[in-house]
Image (cartoon, rainbow, N blue to C red; front, side):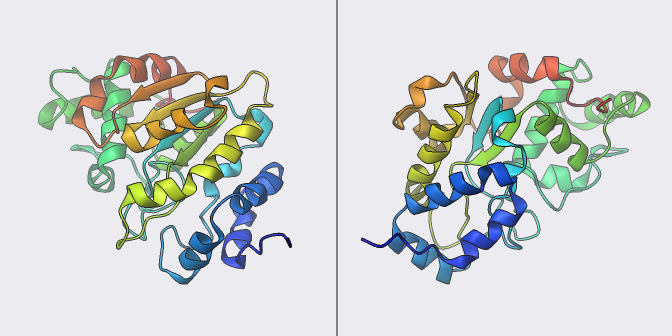
Length: 254
């Protein structure tokens, strides 16, 4: 049987991934349903601008964590191809606390609040209004990051592969349905990462991402599971605070 022909709309997107991932991405796509990929290639999906594999910017062998969310933001200007990184966000802060674009991106907003609580800038019992503005004022007086690209760079610097369970968002398809179609792709990615020493830890956000625990070979990785950061309770998740606290992600990298 001749090898599967992968639509060029997907292979063209390899350009935004580190070269170490290119053969893995090709194998991962080949593991998926040809009918699904053919149909997807004819449909409108997010992210656009060849950003489908933008999460794979870190060389494969440098991956220490695989953070898996649900899917891209449902807005073209926001869907970056990178888990919870809203492409419409530049500045993180304003005088009132978090900037308006951050507040609009619910998952990012709650992640930022979790970091502020963990770093001691914000009282976990009061994460809104004046308390938020006061916390950010103290942070901005310190040597802190200012923009979302700086936060993303800090995460990548700590070895994060920032993936989604479904690499695409379509307004006419439930995220869980697309996520099921991408499971063979993710299984191939994990199979490649199993050869990294030590194997990365899986950080799974929400029920859709948690399905990765059922994939063949997933037992080779440590797992840290939480609710999706779309939920306000994420701000207080002890496991997330323990993971991200020591990384000091709000500080400028040196």
